[in-house]
Length: 357
Ligand code: COI
Image 1: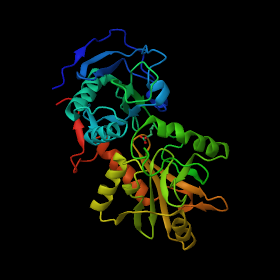
Image 2: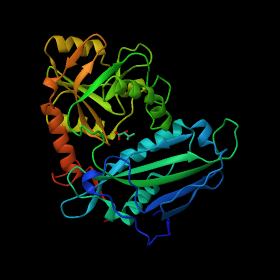
Image 3: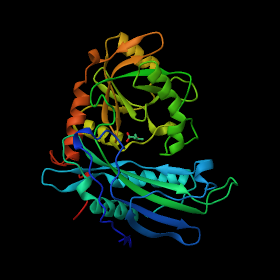
């Protein structure tokens, strides 16, 4: 068990209206902190009142972006208990990201203890309205105070919590997507497979361009040939072509191994669908569309769960997917995943973990 020091506050904040939460705008009463010092390892785990951090302007993370983050959720179930969804998957990925960024690994059981302890302390912040949850944001920053470029010798691991509703204002309604051919999100050998803030900074220009043209997000193509599909916005992407479900393979290293992505693949296979993880070119999608075989397209992620694509703008042509409506497979995935997450459907996969035993 991780040894955590508790410094709890009695000054509780007013809770926001659960029907208008949006995403990531409200934060709970406490946060978790733990320091790393070379030679000493991770130490001083503590849960303290949510507050500003005080950091020297020369703190390394501000300059060289040695930072990683994770995202998962806690859900209120009908019996009033609170559960997590596959937290061990996020923790495994956290350490893969750490390895890529030269950040020291965190013991997976310590990371899980920290998440559960913080959610338990702020449990009353887990909303119960349908479609709402408590978003958990663990992140690590490099804290050495100096400007030479090398891995920091000290770090801060922080967890904050945010009650959330839907990520996109569209919710589960299909979104319009712009096929981006100028900018790329990630390249082979880069950090595409890792959950680093820098990937998201790099993607903002595409998002801004898409929004200025009237689209919700971009479809990212690979960084070498601008031909193969990588991701959609900040999500993994699936296409249903002629009844088969296809999602880009992780082998390129430029795609985030999403927990929702993995869960969709397992769920669909268990339901008897053929799921292919392979390279998928934008041309194959366009050809399938012209042959009347592009059945569905949708993004998957922790924040939005499933986000159907109603239209793809491929520069010279607009592809209307499934008449702009949510498809059968996307709807099945959404209902089943959220059903398991909110404890409404039986968890036959053993994916959920109660916050309190
Ligand atoms: C997710 O789908 O959970 C994401 O990665 C988006 C997040 C950066 C808000």
